[in-house]
Length: 326
Image (cartoon, rainbow, N blue to C red; front, side, top):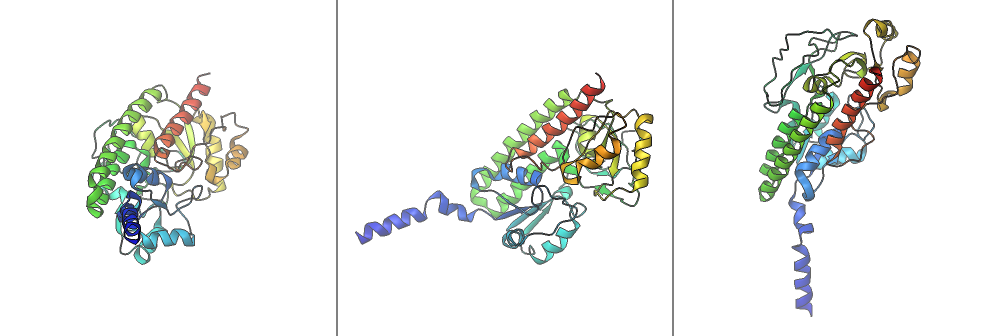
């Protein structure tokens, strides 16, 4: 009896649930990155989210549970220091022994600079010094330059699905190196995820084909990668790229330009008090009803969050365009 019981215990120890302990512990910064990593990990496990849904990644203080997840992590996938400057220090102290993958630095990632001013200068030359990927590349340049004192690379690169496809491969290779036993599964999951994103990109290009002239203002300059990929263009932003509170002068300048620029819609965001948009633009005649979100704040936290996020953005632009066309 004792011998059989010991065998039973041994069988339990060898079940897949026990074997999954070998899967790396993974931490990620924002929900869209969670979704991409979750797609690659599949049924082997899920990452730990360091920034709770609904919070701004630009400024954040981790909860003890989130700091603990970072401390235990074997791998950390995060967008960039420009998006989460506070996370750099945390990685040096808590995540110093983890594999750190800064996704905006993955080779082939498309990088754009912050746009300039309250309204974004329009250029027709279509150049992008950092655009290394020409697959599905419709570079309808939405204007490059620096946004006042907020200079340099715009870190919101996950909103270009071609970047996301590149990142799926990088995530899979990092996990495969850490966990060779499951390397084939990570790579296969990434392959399937890439195929799905390629199909989604084609679908969204078709959906947005009539909206290249739709005129809208965004809450902050987070959507440039999505705009440039799909040939649409925001006319300006209420706030700067890091979502700092806009000055009264900036808001007044935007109000004055609503008519001059033929603005159809002003999009708000759930993280930054949509009532502000209504109070500032509610009497201008533009549509302020659409809330868009670069992070998937209200979406279920799973591997479908990322494609759902892109669909929501496209739906918001289409809603605005249809309203303007009557």
